[in-house]
Length: 274
Image (cartoon, rainbow, N blue to C red; front, top):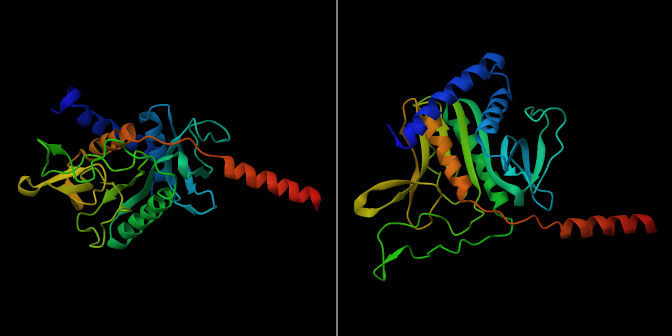
């Protein structure tokens, strides 16, 4: 039994029951239904400060990426959703500055091509989000943590940016015959893969003589791959707590609307003169 009275194990059981309930309503084999199920699940799980929608992240220059589930700052970027809040029929556009996390949803990952596409889509989102203004992590130690004025032989726990985006792939079903592409491994790599109920993949770091350890984020110095490992019946419980841990650490800068306002006012002025 794990900590907090077996919270992860209990969460895994609740998630599976919740997905089965939703699956009785939606046929997950039909297009967007698994996305809708994940939205409904996360809306029950996440604290109220986090907004949730389907759609695209958008940069100030109009560039977009993504197509699935976005977790964003509800206070910084409110959206106008028609009807009840628990419906997610309309795909929104969320400014990159307001994005905490992005989740690519796949009902089934049964071949390498599906997995590679999901990873490439999350990489595109992370690449675009990382163009936003940076918020430095004041506790980041570039050479690694120090003890007794010496650099330790184990890595930093968190990245250099406090507004580091968190990107994931969630799947309902997964074939264990599918392996991760060898090319996976840079700052744009997804941070988490939940592969059905029984497998999970996280970033890992090399501890030298102490072996390999799971990590929330990519580490440029100690990175040791995105690795799949079994978590029989527990993958969603583990993965969702990993997501909660990442969200609780990330801080965002307020959206700077000045450029958008200036452009709009200039456009209005030019149109009036015309």
